[in-house]
Image 1 (cartoon, helix red, strand yellow):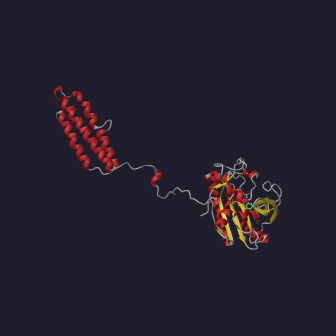
Image 2 (image 1 turned 90 degrees about the vertical axis):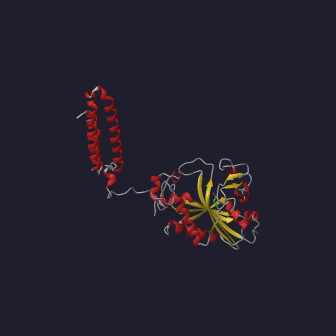
Image 3 (image 1 turned 45 degrees about the vertical axis):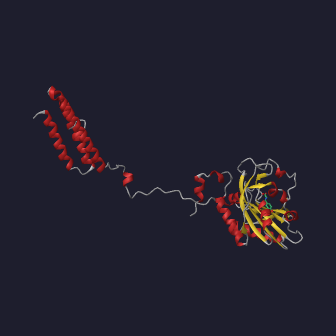
Length: 340
Ligand code: DAH
């Protein structure tokens, strides 16, 4: 047999083998037999030294083209019988799947929703106002004197000389009264901004819910009754409540409401500074000057207003001692409050 016949014989054999291949491992055997390091093609290449000079170049050419042909058929085999992934994990259908992270309402949103629901059941509707406010709505219309310290650059983020980021939700009182006549029973939840150093106890962004009730003959007793019931519904009926006199430019008289410390149950602890009480809101009877700025007759109408700090009451309810955690969006924190 001459050397060229050797190449043909190998070609025929490879064609025969090819017909019987029906798996990846058979394709692998085919590769090893013909194209492997010690395979038949390599063997034939080794014989090239023995081929007579005049046939050498043809032998080389034909062997090279056979090699290419076999490589091509091997690639085709691979596309028909791809390598099976050997990793056990992807094959084991009984393995538990990866749990996706489940979204849930943030506790500030949840607290806001709870407050809205309680006041809705008292007959209050919800209104909103802009976060960028004018000096007029944020201060002047609410009876802040020109030189009141709250207008100071220290507390307020000014956008321009007359525009600022609202420092409280009280301007919504004015906006709402401008557009509606009494009786008014409205709450206004929203985000507020203060130019304060961020610490465990205070943040430069937080949320409030404003409340306003205006009608003929509204009394302080009604204010107390409403806020008393709100606190009992929110914190539970065992909570004790007290009102302390206070001052706000837009209410007269003004008060602050405390609840017995929900952490130590009034015994005294670090959170309540050993007083047994926690302040949760400011309130009072609407100042006649506020009514004047919206053209309500203070002789005819009276009303009460209140402002609740959401983060503060959420922290007390859930036992959180650093307000910054509420804004970090650390998944380890958020996961603790998942409720489906
Ligand atoms: N706006 C006050 C603040 O941010 C809270 C407040 C107090 C709102 C008394 C009221 C109120 O409506 O009557 O500190």
